[in-house]
Length: 456
Image 1 (tube, rainbow, N blue to C red):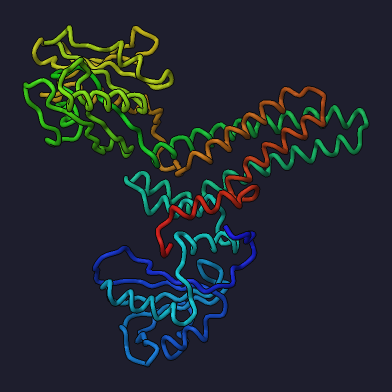
Image 2: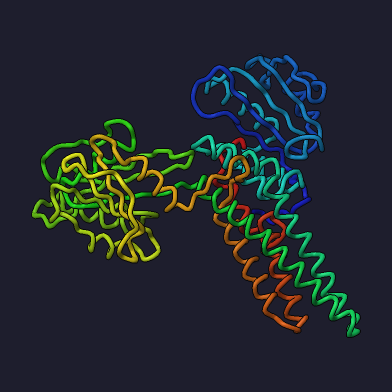
C-alpha cells in the first residue's frame, strides 16, 4: 500500500492485459483512472456510448490500426473501480495484446499491479474487503462447491451476515453507554438484562456464522491427507483407488515408492490432497532413506493421516511411529487393508487409542469399504452438508470471528462492571470490522492484493 485510504481515489491511470497468458480467440486489455475521455479518444478516435459494446479500431501513436474489436467504456462512478474504466476486447494473440498494452502505456498509463483494479474497487467503496477477497477465490476455485461459495461471498452474503452481527453489537453498546451516562438504579438493572440478552443472541448468531465460515475455509484450502505405513501394505493401491485411476506405481517389490506423490481428489465437492509416501522402515538404500525422511516430514505437516496396515502383513504396522510423528491435534485414521484376502467385512470402528479417531476396514484392490473411508475423511475434516448456504472464507476471517467470540464470552463474565463490558463489546465490534476492511487494514491490503492475477 502507498498510504491511500479507503474512499480516496488513486490518481494514476493503470492498464493491464486482463485475460490469461497464451493464445486465444479473444483478449482483453483493461484501463482504469480518472477522466479517461481524452485517453479513449486518442486510442479509438472517439468516446463510445457509456456501457455499450461498440465496434472500434485500436490505433497506435501514428494512427495505424493495431487491432479491431469491441470497446466498452464505463464512466465514473458507475464502474467496477469507481473510476472511468475502458475495456478493449480484441484478438487474443500475445503479440497483439502486448502492442495494445504498450499503446496504453504510451498514452500515460502505467502497468497495473496484481489485484490493483479490485483494490481500487475496495478503496472507492464499491465492495468491502471480504468481497474483494472473494474475487480472487472465485478465480482460484478448484471445485464447483468452492466456486458457488466464492460467488455467494462476492455478492455480499458473508458481509451481510457480519454486518448483522455488528448491528446487534451496536444496540448492546448503546445500552451500555446509556447506563454509564445515566446511572439511575432502575435503568441500570433494565440495561444489564437487555445487554446480556442481546450479547447472548449475538453469540448464538456468531457461532452459526463461524461454523459456516469454517466450512467455507475448508472448501477454499482443502484437506491434506497423508497415507503412511510400512512398505507393501497397499499405500499406492489406496491412492489409486481413491483417485479412480492408476497414478502410482504398484508392485510386489518393497520400497517401490521412493518419494511423496501428491494427487487432488474431491469428496462431495471438498478438495482433498492425498499424499502417497515411501514406506516407513529402516533401510541401507540412500535413495529410500531420503524418501522415508520425506514421509516423516509429510506426516508432521498433514491435516489428517491414514495409518495403513495390511491383513497379510500383521507385523508391518508402524502405528506408534506414525502417532509419534503426527502433531497431537492431527486426527489419525487406522486403515486395515486387504480384507479381500481374509473375508473380513468392510466396516468402521471407533478407535481404541485416544489418538486414533477410528479404524476402517477395506480392500484397496476391490474397492470394498472405500465409501466408508470417504465418509470418515469428511467427518475428520469437520464437513457437514450445508446445501447452498456455505460462503467461502479465509483463515483471517476465522481468526477475526474467533476473536469476536472470545470477546463476547468475556463480556458475559464481566458481571456488573459496565466499563469492562463496554470494552469487550468494542473489541468484538472491531474484530468483525477487520473482516470487512474497516480497521487496521493498510498492511493487510498489500498482502491480499499481491496474490491476485494482473488485470484483476
